[in-house]
Image (cartoon, rainbow, N blue to C red; front, side, top):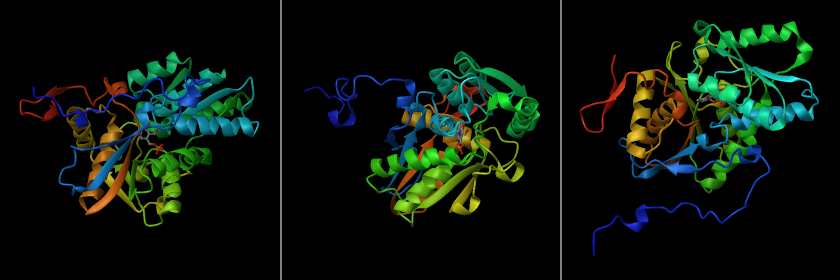
Length: 335
Ligand SMILES: Cc1ncc(COP(=O)(O)O)c(C=O)c1O
């Protein structure tokens, strides 16, 4: 017999004839994302500790933000705040804007997005491809500058707009309470002991954390946060130097772990090379936090959110100047 890879190592793709044959729109594909076991990038974690990453890049808009965007728009429709003739507007560092643009297109509402001028070219193009109009704020003012500019645009013509307001809208965290949390509970058959997510609006960690803690009060909710104000981890907020989102309640976290930008980038390079998962910067940050808690325990199940995939960051600092190093398995960025 010839030597071949053990069949047990290769999982066949899902049977294409199983399950429903079609769904009525892209919106029905939001949620129910897969959990994948991280087997290699474990760095000294005990064998009885599992690390499971939830791949939110599988949402149709390409990120975790599809969930809160849909929830906030549904809430606006239900309350009569979003009616035909209105434009959906929001300030967004990118993924929420893409999600709103995708959902607006699917439902037939125009979308206007206010974002810092330095968000990645890919993100700008994707939002435009869904038909959204873009307005840019001063890159030096970060996401807070976009929030302020958006407020002044609405103030000039208040009846024209519906603003989902992801930083202050409880429908953001409720999306995760209703979907992300129950999915993780079901996918781990109740075995999850630690939940790790990076902080942007805080919606993911607040909603998912609250649901999981209701199922299991001793579960640990752990946040990954950029270590300093001038970081390069797109989508994340350094709370101490930012307008703190109204939906964010620090006291509901068990722990916050500060992450250095270069460490997050290096983790992204490793996840691509060692796990076959090409993900975004905030996934690298979240994974470092997951490893930190996983290394401290003897047994348990750590679930970490990977908010998106990496292909929308190819023009950003994450990959600019990057080259494979001569040392096997080690990559780096050149100055
Ligand atoms: C890439 C990325 N990672 C993480 C987050 C954080 O998610 P949340 O806003 O739920 O805290 C965001 C939010 O925009 C994001 O775009």
